[in-house]
Image (cartoon, rainbow, N blue to C red; front, side):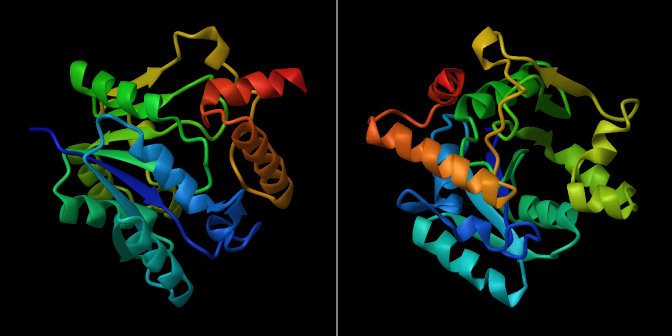
Length: 227
C-alpha cells in the first residue's frame, strides 16, 4: 500500500505577519483551518505539522496535539531537512507539501495531484493557473531524498522544491491545469502574507460561514466575482 503524508510547514516567526498561523479566522486559528482542509482529502493517510525547535513554536506543538495531528520539530531555516526528517519518521511513500498560510488549500487538488503522480509514475507534481494559495506540491519520497542529499544552496533548502523543479533531466515532473475553467483564476489570492490579506480572508470566511456555505474554492471565486 502506498502511504501518503500531508506535511504542513509552519512557524510563528514569520516576518511580515508574526504568529499568523495562530491568528483567529472567525472562530478557528489559521493552522486549524489548514489542517481541516487537508483532512477533507480522500487520499491522505497522515497529517503532520512540521515546525521548528524554536521556543515560540512550542505553541504549534501544543496546537498539533490538540488537533490530533502528528508534529515534527526540526531546523528553522533548512525546511528541506525538516521535510526529509518528517518523511523518514512517517515512512511515507508520497509527501503532500502544504504551507500553513493557506486556509483555502484545496483538498480536491491533493487528491487529483496524488493520483496524477501515481498514474504517470512521476517524481513531482504541482499546479498552474489556480488561485494563489490554493495549491499543493506532491513529491515522491525518492525525489525528496535525492533533493535533500544533492542541494546545497540556501534558497533550495529554505523553499524545499526548487532543486527538483530546476533539474528536469533528473526528475520526472508533472503540472496540472484544472479542467474546470472557473478554477483557472491565478488573479485570485487566498493566502495570508500580510495584515491586509488577513483582514480580507477573515471577512471572506465569515461571509461564507454566515451563509452556511462550504469553504470551497468554487464558493470563494463566486464571491470574488461579485466584488
